[in-house]
Length: 127
Length: 142
Image 1 (cartoon, chains in turn orange, blue):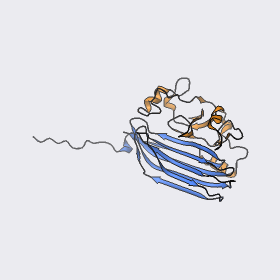
Image 2 (tube, rainbow over the protein chains, first blue to last red):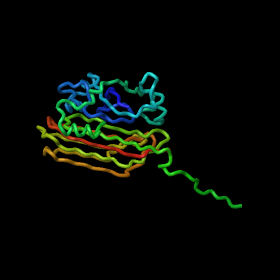
Image 3 (cartoon, each protein chain N blue to C red):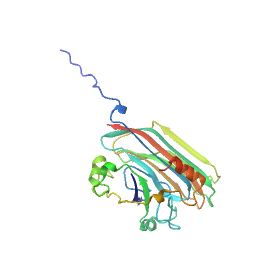
Image 4 (cartoon, each protein chain N blue to C red):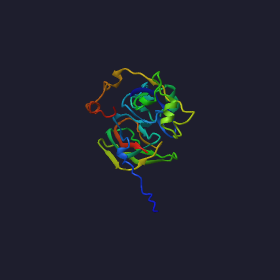
């Protein structure tokens, strides 16, 4: 399932999505802001607090179809059951990220994409 | 009377509701970035996952000024939340086309709640790099 989700940050883990299994789709980080965020992540010298203030999101592919609520969001209880015993996800404090919709054009290669990018996209790397 | 308590018949892992689990990511012309998790897999409860392959590769695409450390790693975190980097690619070479890659086959069996994670970072100023990583495993009933 492809969804846009909020990014999380912890000093020990860096920037991540708070889901147990996922892969990030290349070039889909938003919002792009000079000095803070580009299409593949946050700049290395950007303060995480400034970056997180942007409420950054990214499109991920995550196999969470069996852990959904009727409203189309991640069901914390179903996820806790599936990953029973996991200190991160079988935890009352765990708050799954909101799943957001996105426009298919967001998956298209950017205007400045190289031939290399387009071959990669056609081959499905990162998708 | 003689009692025999021999081993019970148990299907092979591949016959226990096996499921191939895999992810891959590829990042081309990627600008410098802080440490970012690109993909992760967590073994569900009551399942195990035999890791068939983990691989990472990185390549400098355009020169940085000044160059910083490019990193791409794969990490396994066990049930005790102890993490170990099983693949660590680190590069401070500014030569366009410089590349590193590493692959691990049959490296571990993940127990429930254990994870494999791929992450990248680049502390350079300017310049771009290419990263690719993959994980393949067979998940089955514990």
